[in-house]
Length: 408
Image (cartoon, rainbow, N blue to C red):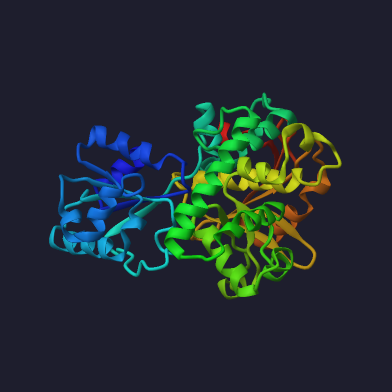
């Protein structure tokens, strides 16, 4: 909330985007208690939406700033253009606070991005730090004081705890429900997104197929995005599969992690990994619970744990003082799950292990990257279900997964 308030004091328009039901509307209402303005929703009031569509200029100018408009994408291009015209005439910061469950830059029919006038902030389901009341400071410490993580305390979390957190996810309304009720909630969420966000915004004729595609991607979470393989399972035309993957991206249900390479030209040629943005939703689609995932033979545990870690880091990067890009690395012989790279080329690398055993072999790819990058390599971590931090040589450390949210 502090970050949004700070942006309102600096920018004419602040746009908060994130998955449906992640808490955007609640956040905006809280902001307005300290910054009295005007709140209107285009999502649940047909008369309000009609007013925005009939007279977008009048709708944009109505009320006192900050003018909060919930689910702005339903107002269409005319409303966004009206907002642009208004802030071009009045350069005072804090004019508009907009939210959108669809990625503002990828909604079909929205040609105006408010570039140069707006700042976009991503809001995701709760992080573990938000749920547990802990600092969520791993990213900053990993770059600024990485050695301190070697001296941390024994984690209170074990495998069953981690897998329970993973299956619960971070959606505010779902996280404390029992497994049966949470499953019903996820089913309702998916149905609403497909009917309200995808069908209404894109005109997709077979939006009912999207839950099946989302389940296919859940089974491939933390793997490279290979459209031909997905299309073989999905069974529709390739261009339809590509369009529908775009719709899932637009609604913030999936995100891709680009590949790291020494040059940006090489990076552009390598495949991204795809991750569902909430492991509770992914687990539900896979029919997985903590007890099933505890079984040593369950192959879903590794990819889901990697996605859990990636999602926690993505959330931290939205507020950490350290600016870094979230990447992965893979070549013909080596793979590293997570690369965090700052604009000046410094790197923190992480391998994710969904077990208790960490040994020197767990660090072989991290050590190779350390030797390749030299001083640009800040530190390499293996994050796992083990409960104790341990050093494994020069700039290499094993830490419990819980350090992601307990450090700081």
